[in-house]
Length: 251
Image (cartoon, rainbow, N blue to C red; front, side, top):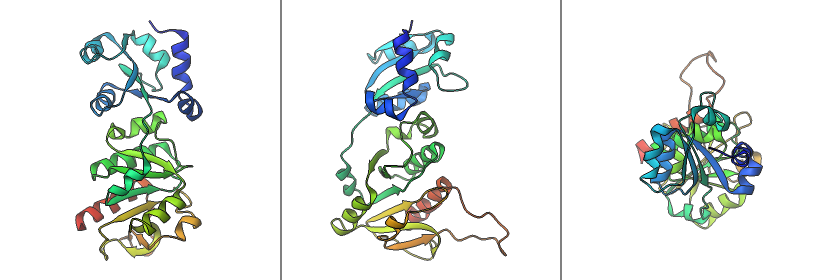
């Protein structure tokens, strides 16, 4: 059984305001839940249909069995999953990011699907930390969680005032700041420094003027079509993957 209070709490976690207030976020799907458990995330409560209860009982997790009709009442998905869990939102010290030699920064990326995909791509290319502007989509938005396909278990995402963070990265820790633009030096024609920050901008507006003013190198993915007979731009998640691949290939 699930109480009305539990249903109300879960439904409230669609909103960033209540995720922040309660310090909780929702994860759906057996694989996603197991990925987070294996990475040390702390479950507050897990709800699962009968077939999956024992998976969590063996790990001494707080779990309740629900019917599929009850799961439908709490699920955020069109087709309800067999498992839904509430996890505590972790806190990561942002200065720990400076221990890395490659940091990904997102400046006002708005679409939850894009953010989730970028987290997954970053995980593939071994990026351990992503630093976001405060107006970037919330990592614990249910759509981001689903799109990340479990990569939020391995990639730490931080939110901060980017200008100050990037100035510190550059001036104190000697990172080179690379920004992705429509017009810049081709990523295929250059090498990259050992300590680097890659900055990706908003879906429609790109990197903000404030952040552009402190970037060291403007880079671009060159198009290979001719006579302007092609798309105007690439999706930010796709572009992130291409640039990460080229940087990793060269380094």
